[in-house]
Length: 414
Image (cartoon, rainbow, N blue to C red; front, side, top):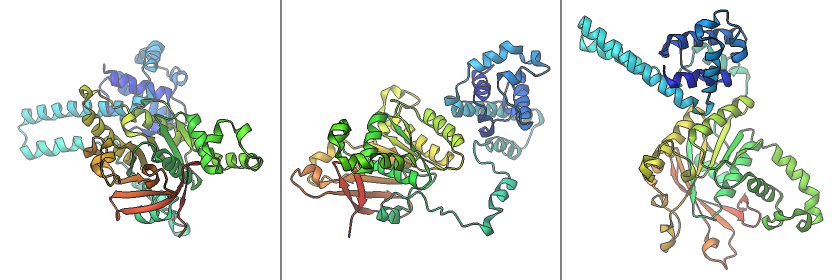
């Protein structure tokens, strides 16, 4: 009996809302016992009941499923973070079995080639996420003539000219934000995150390097206009007027509903599981995902340490995640040192580590550049956001005002 099926059923018992998310049907499972169990789960759910261990023990023919002990065993296999992967494995092995059946039938009954191909094609049509019943589609547009159209323009970046160029962050699209260390990547990301939160989206930040405490103090500093150095000891270092607005700043930031996960070495599968859980907690908000940063994401395989293969797997998974959740994904990336040896230090595509696949899979690529970073005497507080790839619009450079003491970012006054 397949391990994947046990993990699948156990995860459903543990995290019941996954049953609404899955495309696996009872007939996709191999074991008769598992098929029947999934049928019962669907039935219980339809009748408004739970499908946890307790409710399943009330089944009158519990013994035919291996009784209480087998159900507990299934539950011990539960691993909701591997749910997506498990679904794919189950579908793959179902397709393999179907293929064998078709080829056997074809050989026995001497089918025409065309018929064999049609039948094989049918199997491939079983996909993970493309099914919409028309009823549901119609329900969604039922009120349209009486409702204000929600702008599908995308999530505002909080920078007017950047919005004009990119149309904001779009659902299903991946934006790569790349720069040398200390150029302001994390500040720009946190700026995007809080702006999207204030605009009513659900910003989810996966910070693989910086701990949550540091992110929180950075958000406080940039929002309240406090010097970052003072955040080490606010009681001693903040002025009276700064202390007065402290609680207002906290109130403002509270409204972003920003979510922070600061575990090191998270995989995309874990990020998907955490995002899905939050989407169930905040059903009325659309998520927007921020990841800091690309090469710290754990790939699902080691690939013999081949960084290029790891990065291309990750960059493909980012795109899949953006599409599956229909949300924007913004991922930070470090640039290699080759920038430093050029006279013009503005970044280029080739400066992204292992850049080929990233360049291909990303919809938008933004680079950051500050003259003041290289010229310490410069009084120039400009941060250039260089739009170097833009699937749906022009490329070009947008200048914003950056305060490196507080980390705040604002449109430049004309």
